[in-house]
Length: 173
Image: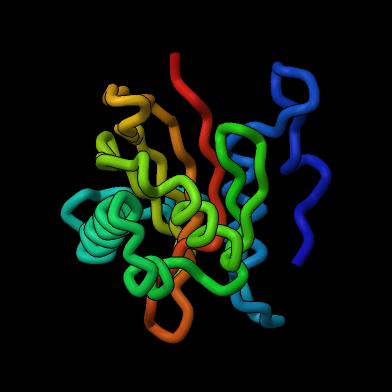
């Protein structure tokens, strides 16, 4: 299924696509392919109601990710992070699944806690786009300090199980 050229419009900022374009691309890539498929608008597929059972589940799963980072709970992280994940941190480092736990272990002694807030989820069938703020507290040289991040993650439901498949974080001032 291909998007028409008119569906992809440049954003006012040069070189960037509008958020709805990304959602259209994600939704198209994950939609079942069939000759009988009909055109769907975002309002027909987007679910953002915090009372939705799947939205509540995704929020709980993200809180489990945050809770597993500081103690470097590799068992929990392994179950929540997909084998084909691709994450980009605020330092512009790209991480695949096999990179995440070793990186956390190497830096984990300094981690005190990770807290996510302002979690917002939009679900498009088996794909969900999640945004949040995250506070990361570290202990270095006898001093605790906290940094804040803005994070976007993509979750995918495969075999009835939600896992994070991608994400990017940006440091907040």
